Length: 194
Image (cartoon, rainbow, N blue to C red; front, side, top):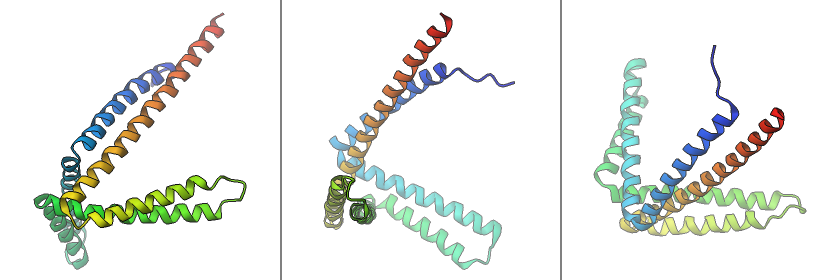
């Protein structure tokens, strides 16, 4: 028989681990903001390794399942070459990632504008429009700076750093919410004992 922990024990562990993760994200986010070129370059190299190993696994899959699949081999080769290029030339990889982020931001802006104009009149559309404008401006910045490898790495590092800071804040708030649940459970337990 499995002995499940009490809700209180679960939430206590949750709070501790969530706060630890929040602190780690806070430190990484600050590092990204203080050293943005390093963070942007690190992200480019990390994505390069992901592409490289994706290529290796795709080649293995193609070898195991359909050795005659030209498309399978081409896909594996594309992953491996793109990954190696990003690993060997991180500034160019940062430029490529800047364009990928720009595409994401433009799609995000389009969705937010669409959302703002399809919401019912009673719902506040202001934040959807603001979010769309901010995404459009950020996307334009990423496109503009993508031709300058160091500037692209700098912008990518700042973007990742700020994103990690917001993640840290969110995680810290989640842990505070779990703290409240623990306190409520203690009160309920004490009332049940009385």
